[in-house]
Image 1 (cartoon, rainbow, N blue to C red):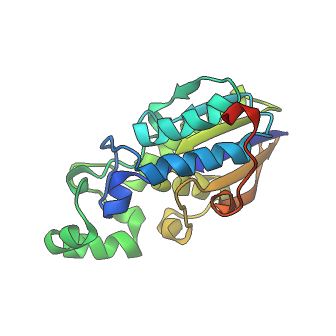
Image 2 (tube, one colour):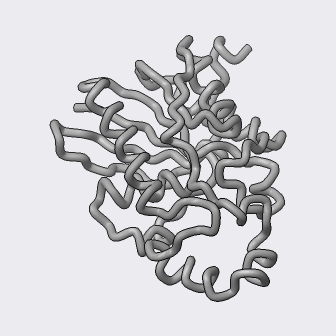
Length: 211
């Protein structure tokens, strides 16, 4: 049995400002760093053999907090990046709605049919993200490994694994440092946990590795 621990990054500056960030490299906030440490404490007892992350710093630094506890490097994977929002990156919902009102409405009702101006669509994101996940699952048969990525990317991965149409992508919540767990029994995936953030409330004990 292969175990994938799929995690969203900690709070970024643009998460806090409610800006679409996409592939813009935005730093973690102080809260985001704290969330990453709490997540690392939660996963300290897992027998993790490898840690992968999007190469964008908000995901990579979150992954480093986890990897440090297990004395592992973080291996960057470009295909795990967030959806490329193109001209929307750096803008708020209100700013986008003012300039692209029809497209924004369709974005929430039929996201699978939206090509972002200057960016990607969800089908392209799903193709590259699932390609990365399938490669990693094949590489880590019968092991437990961690992937740290982004909200949109994780939603499309879960849609791909569960064979859910991408028009339902917004039906899956992904909070900062949310933990999702997928077990693979051969080629059969079973999703056992989605969007769990109880480590932000339940304080795990600090081991010697954190002192």
